[in-house]
Length: 315
Image (cartoon, rainbow, N blue to C red; front, side, top):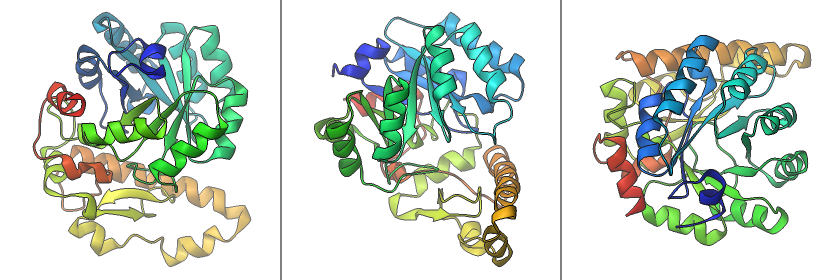
C-alpha cells in the first residue's frame, strides 16, 4: 500500500485518522501511530495554548517509526485562536497541519519554515488549484459522503477531477469504512484516505457510550443533513430529537440570513450555539442529542479499540 501519502508522512498505510471536533484525542492518535497510520486532532479540541502544547509534547514522546501526527486548524476569522495556535504548532513541531474553512496561505508559509507539511481541505477544483498555487503539500478532497461539513461531489467525480487538473497528492475524505472503500478511492487516483466516523465508536474516544453505541446501532440510511448546528449543512445521526427539531433553519434565521449586514453575525451566533450543543451531546447523555457522523458508520458493528478498527481497514 505504498503511495505518495505513505512517502510524504513516512507511514506504512495511506490512512489519516481524521480530526474530529470533540472526539479526537492523543490516546487515539498514539494508537494510530502504533498501527502505522497518521493521526490528526483539531487544535480547537484544546481550550488553552498550554493544553495544546502539552498534547504536542505527549505525541512527540510517544511517536513511533512508521507513524505521524498532525493538527487541524480552522484558518478563517471565526477562529480567534488561529494565529496563536499556528505559532505553538510551529514552535513545538508536528508532522503536518490540515487547514479548513479559509485561506491557508499564512499557515503554509509559517509551517514550511518549521518543516511542517500542510494539507488543505477542498470541495471543488477552484479551491484545489488555489491551494496548490500557494504551495500546499497535498489536497484533502472532501466529498459528499464525508461526516460533518461535507462536499457536493461524489468520491469518484471529485478525485478524478482533481487528479486530472492538480499535480499534488489527493487524500480522499468521506465514505471509507472498510478496506474495499480504501481500494476504491485509490483506484480513482487518490494517494490515501482520511477516515473519521468509524473511530467515534472506539474505546479510546472520549465521548459518551451513548454516542458510540449510536454509531453501532444506526447506519448510512440514518444520516441526514441539518442546518440547525452551525448554519452550514452538516451530517448528523437522525435521532428522535433531530426529527423533532427538524433539519432546516428557523423562519427567523431564514429572514435574517437574507439581510447582507446581519448574515455574518447570525452565522457566528448560530455556530457558537451549535458547537455548545454538539459538545454537550458528546459529553453528556441527554435526550437532546445531536450526534455528528457520516454514512461510513454503516460498517461499524461494535465498539472496538483503535488498533482493531485500523486492522479491519487494512486487512
